[in-house]
Image (cartoon, rainbow, N blue to C red; front, side, top):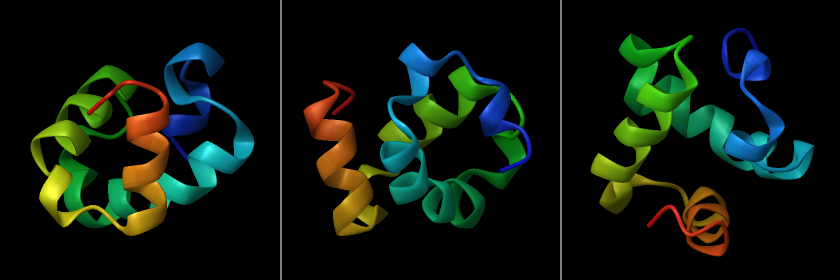
Length: 64
């Protein structure tokens, strides 16, 4: 993924974590890309709209 792939791995989790949230990042937070910190903040703000897979990842990583 363009933009999010340049984020520190600790911020974005595993490749599987990123794969779970990339579609949501583009759908909900495209204006924040490529700034990983802004994307994560946006995903937190939009948490009620996240896919189940991304919500699980965000919860597991303590982001929401």
